[in-house]
Length: 156
Image (tube, rainbow, N blue to C red; front, top):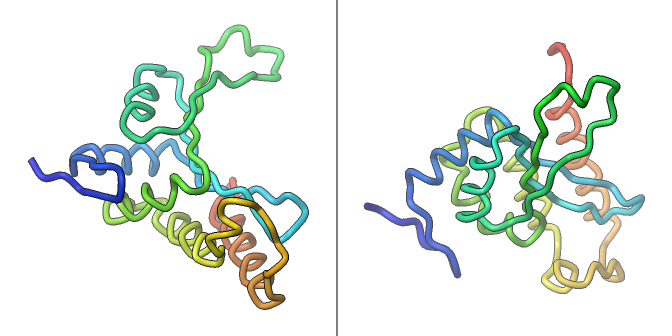
């Protein structure tokens, strides 16, 4: 059995491939704007099968919670759960799953590109003192490109 080794994690190739399939089908890469040029990176998977998301959390870390549904018929539906990984975890997860992604490969690459614009100091402290105007524009473009890829509805 072949393991992929990263600085402090090792994953089976089969787990990475299965995880990438979950992301392609049920996942979302996002950059949440906080009104600045610093965005909150995240990868999430939503599903009604809690056992599945426990499998993900056990292997890839992150957090798991039950979503609230604000809909008049919500009481008739199964509960939905969401697994979320943020920021620094993505520096390890994305390179490991990138070879297995199909539908969400471009989104993953944009998140990696965004993460490369962050200095080590910003990654841990969210300080923006040393961010150049060029880097701010690059981040804004990455955010816009990701929004287009994540847009719902019919393709144009």
